[in-house]
Length: 277
Ligand SMILES: Nc1ncnc2c1ncn2[C@@H]1O[C@H](COP(=O)(O)OP(=O)(O)O)[C@@H](O)[C@H]1O
Ligand SMILES: [Mg+2]
Image 1 (tube, rainbow, N blue to C red):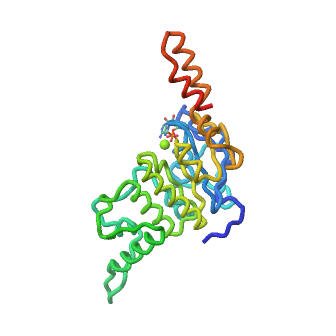
Image 2: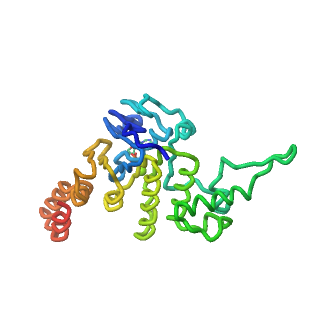
Image 3: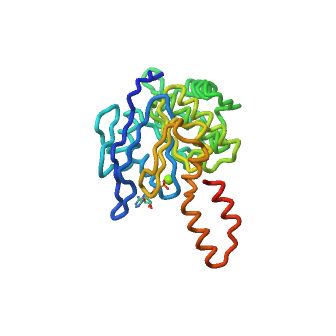
């Protein structure tokens, strides 16, 4: 358990990133603290993945500062970020579908034991630990021997979260973990986000769904076309405001106006607009 110090584990200050002539991020600030969930919200192309790739060591920022434990840092590889305690779970999880759950849990960090000159995989211990860690997170798997491909998308996300917790991550980054899931499964993943938080990790939760972000988030960064359009603590914003900002109330209004001019029926759009603002 990491003691909550109030000092951010990670800070972004004025961070910018270009891909050639495309400006993917411009002047973004964000803090990640232990025992808190920081949500990053935005539409497609807003720069969410770019932001986390900088923290995860896949890309390097061009402008501003990335501070890790207060020190200015620029990761050169995902390995460096991982060594600094930053674990990332991508939407297309890096799992081997036909391998048993326990193999996937220990992939790349297998436990071994020695018998004389031989070094063997310690299969029993790995199974035992996998079973215990999953059960501690409240994940009840009948059999850790079953191929991970047989698990639902939500369960796979949960295994990935349990794995990051077990291997001692300080920061857990989740890129749209609920995007491809139904309501019930999304709920399960949201619960594990809270468990990771309660174990003292600083969680970065990327989503375009304010209904997923609001119940679990402590703060919310809203991105639009690479810029921050808002950064709120939970007590500074309500769900309906967050939804309205995400829905782009002004843009819907513009669209309704255009449709009216070409004689379209705009009743439905008006309803959306009223709901959104
Ligand atoms: N590797 C890349 N090369 C060039 N442009 C990119 C690359 N990755 C992302 N972009 C562009 O940067 C912008 C932000 O993308 P991204 O961070 O993936 O947004 P999001 O995850 O919010 O959908 C988009 O305009 C996207 O096309
Ligand atoms: Mg993305």
